[in-house]
Length: 506
Ligand SMILES: Cc1ncc(COP(=O)(O)O)c(C=O)c1O
Image (cartoon, rainbow, N blue to C red; front, side, top):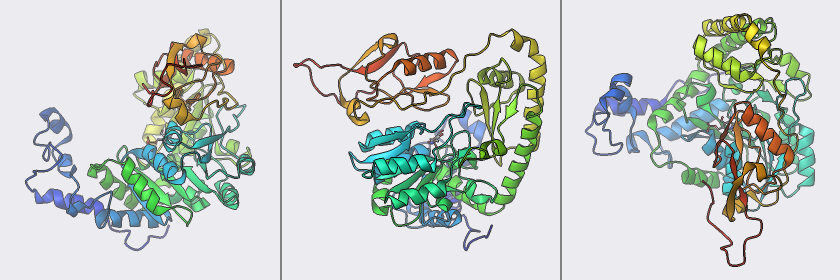
């Protein structure tokens, strides 16, 4: 990869460290005053220096909301490194970035085409924007039971049916690393004069290696958001939003970012974003080659373990338009009477290995430049041992129920934002079929909203949720995590009852 002009600098990180080294007396925020006010237990564990980097907004380190010096310079370098026209540093993860993309692209009432398996931050952004979601359901793979990605045909059909939609959002890669033909989708979306937004939370590394699937910006997307903290070395919450081309209203985007982001951003996070960009430009490709190599070695070894299989790029590429980011290892336990949950539990408690996620029949690993071949060998050796050691226990377990994500999008009775302002009531979940849901019901894993506010609870969805709970998943963001009860819209408010209630969340 070519090293662009100025990429040997880390202007923001240098400014933060330069200021910290001046050792000035602080009569400003944060209140810990370079850590002196912090409890010893914390300082003793992490050392003193990190607190010196935790600064407040001041001219020496620039302002995230009105960048004019080092933050501006760092963002310009990031844009150049990613091949974008503009880049924005984010301190509230891709959650904040998805919200900014959607709120800057959609006015209240505007239609936006999104995959049903979008992250819940996309759904919440649609609610905040007061936009009208048009959901597309990606296919579920019959072999792996994984939810695939949108196809160009699905997007084209939706654009044809909804010529008034303002934007299309695609999740690329998905949580499991599945990518689609974004270039073809970008062409279609632009033909229909819409804006293409990409939730690229799981792809901040794609641009930096030629054998990885193409990044969103390289594929022609107008805007994308990446969780730099998830797959590169930035600190948690550190993400980037990139823009390319003329379809995005940059002033509106900047205003939206100001509305959504804190006025006290963490300079430790911001500095780590500057360093992540530097790290990828300088030796990122080589580091990723090593990651790819160790993933391939692990994949090959896992695929020799009886009862287990690890998703390969060749398998995925047989599905039209799809590809796989091979740094995500999806290990299926389908050939064993053992769930992904059980496998992850054993790996954790007996082998000290914490995976990214587990579901009914998969364990998912994110491998990044922070991992070593030795760690992956420990993982594969652990799998080999578990399959032998637990053979009898697995054999005595009753066969697991196959749980597949509902293949359709629930019927929307009321706009999601409107549903949040209506009168609601909590009812026993077992009596909820036929009612209109008033909250987001999102089991983790896989973290995909099964119901959104305003959607009708059907028997199939009810059964799916019961099965999901039974298998050990948690329901996040819902008023009753055990789903004994659920919030639904009042059927017919009494004439004397108040018609509206402000945000009936919680
Ligand atoms: C596809 C997708 N988008 C967005 C997010 C939110 O990202 P963040 O945690 O950086 O806010 C996630 C988090 O897991 C995700 O999986």
